[in-house]
Length: 403
Image (cartoon, rainbow, N blue to C red; front, side):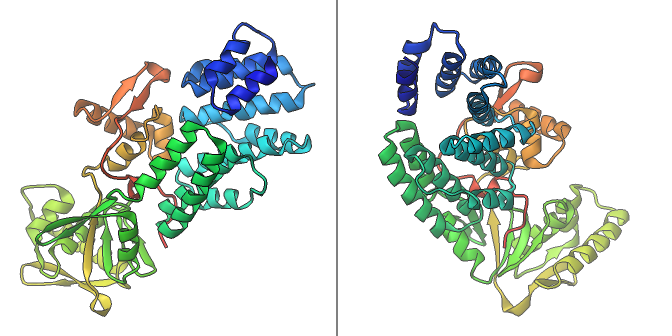
C-alpha cells in the first residue's frame, strides 16, 4: 500500500494516495499523507504530518528523516515561509547524497535555489543551479530545473535563453504527464507574450514585451528604467532605487527631454510640495548636484533660464520605461500576484524592507481593495488576485544591478 501510494503521488494523484494511507499512523504513511495534503494545497496540515513523520523515523533512520525534511522545506516554500535557516535543508541534502538518493538530493538543492530566486538573489540562485548535475533527472525534477533556469533568464532579461529553457521544460513535462507541471510551463511561456513595461512618449505610450525591453536596453539609448528604478545606457547602470529624490528628478527630466523642466515642477516631483519656498530651491540645487555627479558618465544636467535639462552623452536618445502598473507598491503587488499566500516577514525579506514598512503598504493596499488578508496575528497571510494581461517580471526584486 505504501508503494502504491508513492506511485500515485509521483503521478500527481493525491486523492488516490490518500485512499491507501489515510487511516495509517506509521511514519511512512504520515509522510505520504503530508505530501498528498501539500499537493491538495493544505499546507499547514501537511507540515504537521511531515514533522510527525520525521520524529517517528528518528535519528536511526537518517534517509527517511532527510526525505521528510526536504518535503517540509518544499511546503515551506509554497507557503512563502522564507525566514528559516537553510542549514537543515543542506544537512538533509548531504545525508541523501551519502545514501545515494540522488533524485531527492537534487530536489533539496532545487528548493534552495528557488528560495534564493524568490528573495531576488539571482547571482546566488544561478550559482546554485550551475552546480547541479541534471543528467538523468526524473522528468518531474527536470521540469522544475528548467523552469528555474527560465525564470532566472527572464529576471536577467535574456529572453532567448528563457525560450530555450522553456522548450526543454515543456518536453520534460510531456514526459512526466503531470497536469500541474504542464500548466506551469504554459503559464511561463505565456509571460513572454504579455506586455512587461510601457514606453512613454510625447504622444502617449506603447506596451513592450520582455524581448522588446531587452532590445531597447541593448540599443544604446539612455533609458530611465522606472521598473528597476535606475538609469542605463549600454552596459552602464546607475541604480536609484534607494535614492527616491534623485530618481524623481531623473524621471521628470527624462520625461521632458529634449525640453527642460522648470524649477517649481522639479520641486513638486521630488519633494511633493505645492508651495515651494527658498529652502526647497536650495535643496533642489543640492540634489541636482548629486544627480549630476552620479550620472556624469551617462548624461549631463544643465541649467536653463527656467529650470534644468537632461543632455545625454554621445547624442543618445532618452527613453522612459514605465512599469505596467503604477504606484509606489508595484513591487509588492507583483510579489503577491503569484497567487501564493505571503506572510509580512517573507515580503519584507524579498523586498529588502522593514516589516513595518511592508505592513503600512499592505494596509494602504487593503484599504484600496488591492490585497486581502487571511488569518490573524502570526498566522496572517496576504493575497492578491493574479494580474491578468501583463507580466510582472520587471517589478520583482533583484538583489544585483542589471548588466
